[in-house]
Length: 181
Image (cartoon, rainbow, N blue to C red):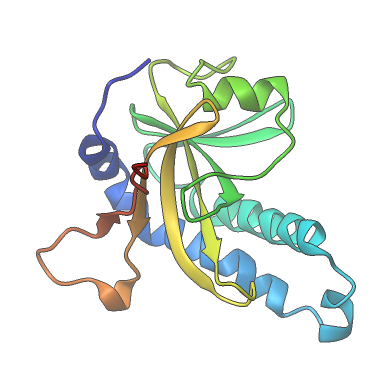
């Protein structure tokens, strides 16, 4: 298991922040272009599946061709290897940086930071995704999380372009602290 810090990993991902933000926000934007009478038929799972499919399509268009990025599909799990430090997958997330999905053996291994077939190790396995607002109509934030089994070691939010200050970090730590008592 790699011991890279949150700061080191986010520095490695920094050149790709704009693409990652566009992928996550773009997935929801494309989904919202469906006619309202079609979207009303979708439960939360169907909507998340459609948004995920759009995120993967946008990632294939915008992230896969980028220098330093390699795309792999491993038994249906689509991941992007970024540099030497990160293997990412895209998902809908909660405020703690956790994703919801059926925990297949492959996903459990990914979340436990185990190497995937054909992926150079010791890259960190990261989940990148969007946190929707309560209504599911907007992206509250785009985030990067380092899963550790069923928990999350850390979670960072990529700041939208309009919230960035020149010379300041382009991300913030949004890790939920353990509650005492």
